[in-house]
Image (tube, rainbow, N blue to C red; front, side):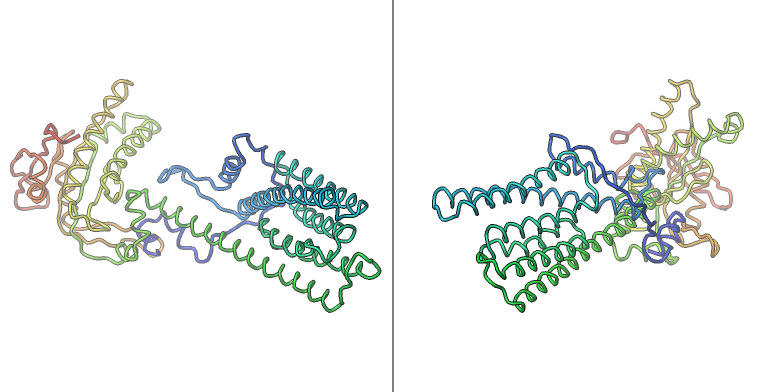
Length: 483
């Protein structure tokens, strides 16, 4: 990946810094999202999570994917709130079942004392009232802060202890619920909440153990057994807390890698198409393909605006920049659509390379098709400009293929990756001969694409720096099959 920094300087602030993504310490904050819509809590939760990560259109210059500890903190806080809602639903399911069982034992089987039955009903109703209140505040109104999870864990342990000591006894099926309280607390995605739930459960069991002495309804528990149970609860809390900590770490690691990947792909997509950018980042040879200098056979496309110098002198700087941005945005879209690599902008000129950094067996065909579509886009752009009574552009394009040296050029502090050689120089001379609205290609390109496109023989031309004349062909833009 270090080679990416050398080819395109935009990668330097992204990939050259060692270590993890720098995270800023967050302020203490409370999450107070709006009430979930009636269309469902799932949809509301999706929209609540989406705001933590902002993603603009891939490849846009305003692309900004940021991740801070504050945003991750808010994300986990939302997960805690979601887990609290799930635990509330479990309470609202369990307590009616418990009440139904009490009424069945009392009225149908008549195996429960009336006084114990009343205690059980009142304890369950108190627990149910707390659950309804929590559900109303957290699920309906969306009010949640971090102390809520500790209060809920303490309340569950308190009501369970009260029900066991005052009603059911310690030889019933409710004692194992102390362990379940620890397990379901993992839904809150909070290590501290799990450890707190383990301590509350162990404390509740200690109350049951101490209450077993002198209470005829409770079976005496030996100190050894009580200590073992409480120790297991604490150890279970540490085990569940460790699992949640690992999950949070995996989420953080995934988020960091995702951020780096999106930033790199976004920056790289300014120079190549999104598909090529993904291929470069995904393939193991991607870094070496754009690393050291090497020989390559490529197709080069160069476009240039005719009469740009006098036009720029007659226009205001703001108007000129606006015109160039509108023109380049259309041209770059066409280049990326044909999987070309944007080598560089040179003033008003555009240099595009095909068959680099990855091999394209039809590089010449892609280059000619790209040039034809660029001229079609320019014609449409000129119609828009003319209708708005603005300046129109005339662009000449040259396409040539041949060997180049692809490598890094620059100093230690600033380097760029480009293609160099006679092929690039001749393409520049070739496009200089092309009139506005025309596409000139060399004989080498014509030979490889004559089966796909129609050409007009312009004849042999002289080029500065070359002793011999070279045969030039003009692409027939009116031929069927072209844009």
